[in-house]
Image (cartoon, rainbow, N blue to C red):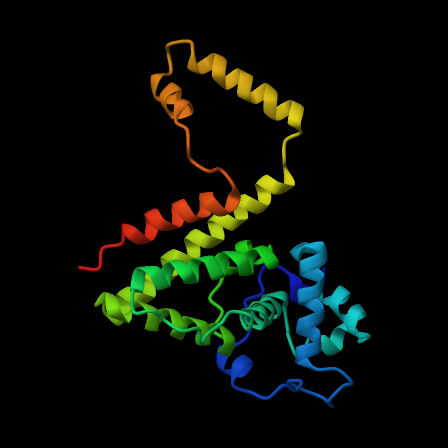
Length: 238
């Protein structure tokens, strides 16, 4: 790991990152662009996971020397900001709004989940940072507009959107982890028999009642929708 990829990296001033043209911070313009670097990093993260994204590996993908990348992104923190903002361009920042802020907020939550499932590294990268790029801010503007009919002031609407994003990221991170650690059919059957035995021992009445409940879909989509509905329907707009 190079010094610039170490844990002390903090990224660059957002004004320098987002308000300057796509050109190196120093030296002559090379035969690649900040966009090419970002796309290469996103492709690596999507296919091999975020740990595969190193400055050296990205440099190899674009056919550049690693030191030349530092003129565009001096550390991995800055590269992650570029990656997040790049993929956030996939979010529809101008989708029609219904005027029903709860329905619109739920729609936004579903969009975020689909987005994070396409890019699983986002679920852990997003909560750990504040990315302020133009694509990210465009979607934030859309979410704040969706919340305007709630009557909440601007600061409260920011908090609600942050709460929603944190919920979606946490849920998707759990979904991804569960999918990666999927139980074999035999193991799942063994766990079901064990829980049935525990529930019948008389010492766990709450668990027995919970396990006896039926009729609730357990697909990932249905589970997410239930959790999202509870969150949004429980928001206080007073």
